[in-house]
Length: 207
Image (cartoon, rainbow, N blue to C red; front, side, top):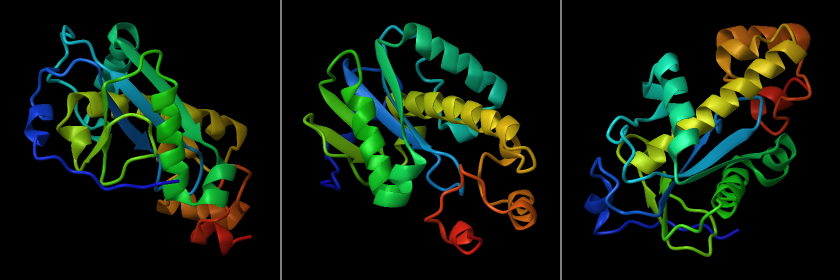
C-alpha cells in the first residue's frame, strides 16, 4: 500500500470553523495504541448548514455526554458518513500502520457520495483514487476530521463495552484496551484472550 506525506500551502482554507469547502471528507481513526480490539476509522462529509459547525473537536477532548449528542447529530445530518475497521487479523498480519491505512481507505470508498477531496488526520494518507491531504492535529482543527473522530470513538467504545461483557475480568469498558495498570494486571492473571493483538509486544510476551 502506498503511503504519502502531503502538506498544502493552502491548508489555512480548511482550518476555518465553517465548512466553506462542500464535499470535503474528513477521516480519522481511533484505537491504534490499545493492546486489544480493532482500529475503527470513519469518514464524514458535513453539511455547510450544520448548526454544530465550530463545535466539533478531537473526540478525546469532548465529554462523553456531549460526544454522544454530537455522534447522533452527525448520523442524522451529515451529507454522508461511513465507519469501517481493521480487524485483529489485519493488524497482526499487516502491522498497525498499514492496517489503519487500509481501514481509512475503506471508510472513504464506502461513502455514499464521492468527495472532492479527503482530509486525513496525521502525517500519512491511505492509497486513494481521490485527492487527499494529511493534516497533523486535524482532529482538533478541521471540522470534518473532528466529526470523523467523534463517530469512530463512539463506535469503538461500544465495541469495547461488548467485549467487556463477552470477556469478563479484563475491564475493557473501562480502559478500552489500552495498556493501563488494570489491564496489565488482568493480563498477568488471566492471560490474553482472542481480542488481544498478538503482534503487540506486551501480548506476545504472554503467549
